Length: 262
Image 1: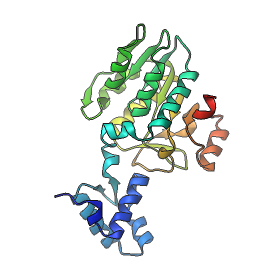
Image 2: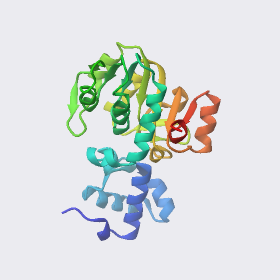
Image 3: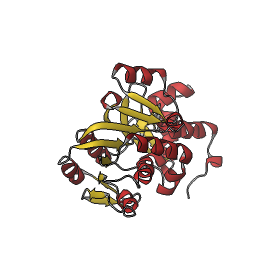
């Protein structure tokens, strides 16, 4: 039977909290943080993993919901207002008659909803949910990348959609990621998602990164790219000074969603 958080000891609860916030935790760092041996931390991680609260890896663990990227409905409701503001801000950036790639994720789905009444859009996506959204549009043309569909969130991931996406060169790509480090690294948990994101980065003239403030100062094991490759960052709150410095150094426009809607 799975343990509840109330049945964990204080250190295990703290480890779980750190993992939830950061996405990934290492045995070495946790041992230093709690002033215990690495063996003790490994036992804690094994216990949390056995109860499906963490997913252990060599040298550390991922937050279980992070690896699964949360249940779809839970992610959809997380930072819901912020995602809507971000989506509306993106819709102001993208003009009618544009071509655009939208990747997987609940924020990009909100963007699709905000773009629904644009005219003459050509949309490429690896997200079945986005196809369903644009089914309500009278004139949007939509291309869905083929491949294996992940049932949990209707994402098409893996090698097949990358080949499809690389055929295009669109005006805009709107992408979300799981984690953004203070060093500018854009990261995700699943290699099958990462390779699709990399293909999208190469297939657009202007790259828009959408990220609510929960994505900053997090960690994930797979690197997609660096924020220096982005043209526009749309978020609900200013990121850290380190990220702002990288953006300024690379002429990346930072759009605060609320400000853009005033």
